[in-house]
Length: 111
Image 1 (cartoon, rainbow, N blue to C red):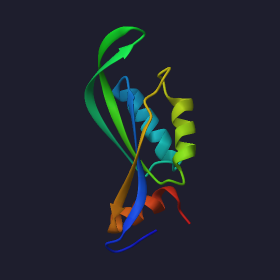
Image 2: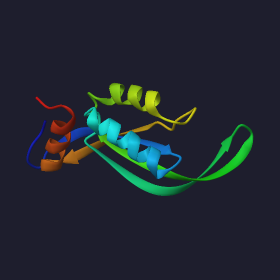
Image 3: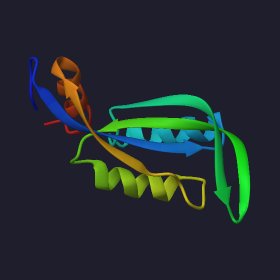
């Protein structure tokens, strides 16, 4: 964990849910398991190909903030508790500065 103006390594995980209720439930589960420090929910419209058809759906995007140490467990829980047959799972390497980075790492990796 780095303090001050230093950067702490973190991961941003993106997934979508079909509605607010399922997004709320998944976010709360990940937080209760301490696999995420924070989950932001955003209403979106998604366009995609599924089973040979072009789809357009209202969804809720989850932006999940976690540590590299918790990423594997988070992926397992997300897959196990997600309502989609093929859930979106996009992982981005990121950095968090100063006190926010320290808080994030402590929230998912308390010592």
